Length: 461
Image (cartoon, rainbow, N blue to C red):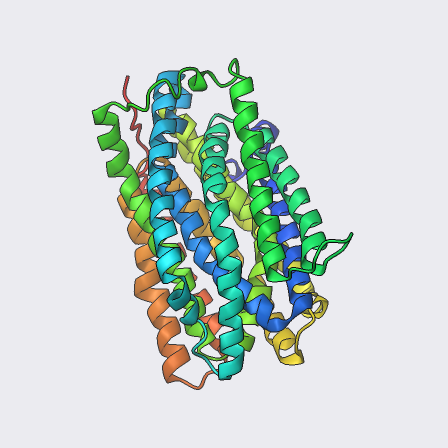
C-alpha cells in the first residue's frame, strides 16, 4: 500500500491547514460561547432551556437554507477564483444577495404566521399541560426577538462565504470572535441582570444574539469594502445587480439541489428531534445538551468540509484534475482520523459535562448517554461530510441531494419515527440505531467519490 496516496507531505498539510485552522478557531469559539450561553439559559430552568433549544432548531433550518442557497454560487466562486476571473466572482456575489433576500423573506412569513404551531410540534410528549404551555410562551418570546437577527446573519453569510472561497479565512474568523465576545458579555448581563440591567432570561439571550450578529455583519462588510485591492470583485458590486442570464441559469441548475438539500436535511434534523421529543421534555433537554457539546467536537470535520470545497474547487477550476483526486483522499483521511481522536476525548467527558447544568438527574443521565453514543460514532459523519463536499466541489449537486437529504428522509427519519413511536426501546437505543445508520451512507459516499464522477470543471471563459 502506497501511504502517499492517503497522507500528504508537510507542504500539503500547511496549505490545507492555512484554510482550515481559522475556520476551526472561529467555529470553536462560536460553539464554545454557544455552550456557555446554553449553560446560562440552563441555569434559569429546564423549561426555558428546552424552549430556546426548540426555537434554535427551527432557526437552524433557516440557517442551513441560507447556506444551501449560497453554496451553489459558491461552487462557481471557488472555480472563478482558480481562473482569476474577478467579474465572475462579482456575479456570484450578486446571486448570493438575491437568493438570501428571497430565503429571508420566506423565513419571516413562516416564523411570523407559523411560529406557534411549529414550536407546539415539540411539546406533544409526556410533559404536563402546564409545562407545555410555559415552554410555548418562552419559545414565542425568544423567537420574536431572534427574527430581527435574520438579516444581518444573511449578509454575513454572503460576505464571509465569498471571502473564504477567495482564501481569506482570517477576517471571517476575527469577525466571528468579536461577535461571540459581544454575545457572551451581553448574555451574562441580560440573562441574569448584572450591572444594573434587568434580568430578562430567554429574552435577554435573544437580544444578545441579535446584537452579536449585527456586530459580525458590520465587521465583514466594512473590511471587505475598505480593502478593495484584495477584494477586486467588490468594485462596482452594487453599481448594478445584473447577472448574465446564462450564469443565473447555470447557478440555478447547480444550486437548486443544494438549497433543497439543506432545507430537507435541516428539516430532517428538526424532524428527528420531534420524534425523540415524543418521549418527553426531558429528552429534548438532554438532546440539547448533547448537541451543544457535539458542536464543539465536530469543528474539525465541519471545517474540513469547507476546506475540501475550497481547495478542490480551486484545483478543478484550474484544470488540475489529478491533484484534486489526490487531495480529496488525503483530506478525507485527515478528517476521519482527527474525528476519531476528538471522539475519544468527548467520550471521556460524557458523564462530566451534563453536571454543569441546573437540571434534573434524569436529564443529566440521558445527556451523558447521548454524548457517549455521539462520541463513539463520530468518524462516520466525518467521512460522509468529506464525501459530500468532494462531490459538491465538482458540481454534482443532484447527486449530493440524494446522498444527503434524500437519505435522511428515506432512512434516518422513518427509522427514528418507527422506533420512537412503535417500540418500547429506550430512547438512547433509538438514538444509537439512527446514528449508526450513517455507516451505509459512508459506503455509498466511498463508491461515489472513488468513481471520480465529480472530477470536472464547470466554469467557462
